[in-house]
Image (spheres, helix red, strand yellow):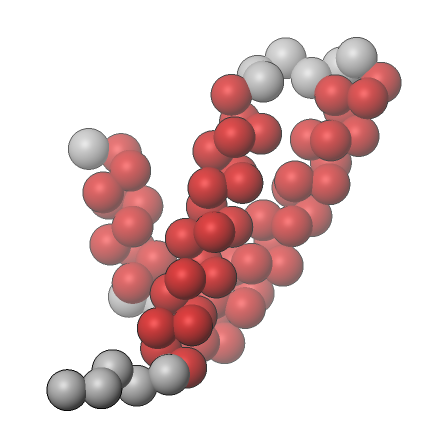
Length: 70
């Protein structure tokens, strides 16, 4: 349920908002990698979920940038 809710929230965003969201996720991904390297990371599953969210945002950006051909 949580994943589908997140997906529908992302679909409602504009291209500019998706760009902002992507930037935020990339910063979080960097911080998580840094925490993992220093041994301070507690929630290791968050790394995977952030990586998937980045892919989701990039996919939605691409879908909105290129109109669907019918």
